[in-house]
Length: 219
Image (cartoon, rainbow, N blue to C red):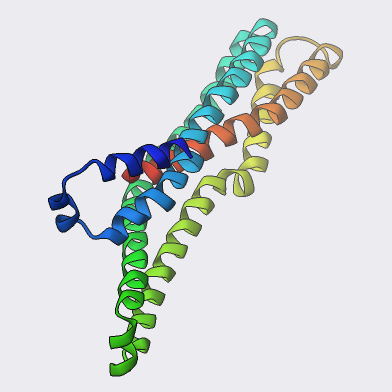
């Protein structure tokens, strides 16, 4: 609400020449749509990252006090997996985000043009042309949003089992020389339980970072 009001006030303070150079449908889109996108999909993910980083640090610190070497290896393993995913997807997400912004701009412009010239469209029978143009841009806009959501949730659905399995195997290997089963099993249970708590925090950080990359074009 506050950001939309401030943006509208900034537009209204501009000279008339500013409105001659800019399409009003683009300005409407920025005030009504992109500000909400900025808040929900750029600023809120920053808060999510900060909160889950605190959770992550607390759990890692607790595990580090129990077994520093296994904790360091587990963190390195998870960091490598999500770091590679982040490196692989962030450029694509930024490119898709720029395309989403342009597709949304064209959607608003298509609707604005057809309604502002509805009399001409009716007389010339141009409704199918405008409808097809809007359908094309709307379809692209939707597919790009779906792509960003899928990329953000990819590790949760495809890699959680593999990562947890890898963590368990790593812990078993690292603890194999530390004594009998009575001393190893409680530590394995602790690290497995902590891994299940770590995964949601890491996944939220990754998904939030993906949303930030995708929506950077708004800025």
